Length: 345
Image 1: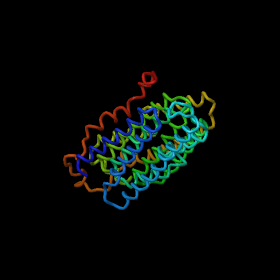
Image 2 (image 1 turned 120 degrees about the vertical axis):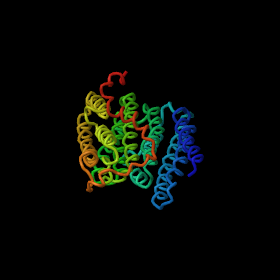
Image 3 (image 1 turned 90 degrees about the vertical axis):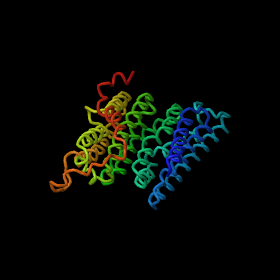
Image 4 (image 1 turned 60 degrees about the vertical axis):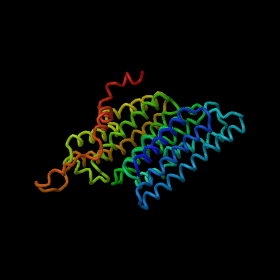
């Protein structure tokens, strides 16, 4: 794909998200989501391979179905109430349809089946766009309509997502699929808090985006498509190995690192609301996620691929990808925990 076309597509992608985030009219929000979907499809299908074509088709079908549900939900709501305003109360059929549509857009369980398949069929960069940028527009709609949506449905979907994200990632060997299940689990945590405290939801989303950016940039620079590939990261760059190890542990939510902030605050808030059983099950499911992050960390930092002394280091050509961009997300995803009181303000 030529750089000019690629830039136009990325601009359309950004425009779609911004339109959805800035709109208070259901039709404008729908237009933004459609722009977003139509811009991603050519990015997924740039690789002329049956798998990427399949991924693009699956992505198109799920996102088109979700967009149609959003349009149908807003039309039935306008029919009953006479209002197209996003912030106005929704009728029960409309909010049920909207909840299903947003869960499908985000990849929340039980509507998550498309996400690992689409991410596995696309390139690392495309997978990075789908797991980060593509979550912003649906999350902004959840933020705007949360007062009108069902708390119990979101708590149930959040619990299901964190369990599916934990169990699903255990047996995976492909780093992209591991990141897809990681995304499902993190979105589960966001869904549970969305109906209780929206400021923690926004903070969790921002921290998730930064941590995922850090891990994906590490995987892109080291060209690690499978767990086995990560064993040769040390021979490429010892510094990258340390950054990747700490970013993965942060994504798992280990205490001294940034990833612990959202889990800590969500647990605290849910315990205050007396959701003790729910938070116990979610904490247990985050241990499942931690297992596959630790497995990736182990292969990255503590194992070396079988080699002779002559081939200890890879050929160090000038890197194709800019390594400068990893510095800021990596630093934030590791060292932000002491700043928690400032973030909460």
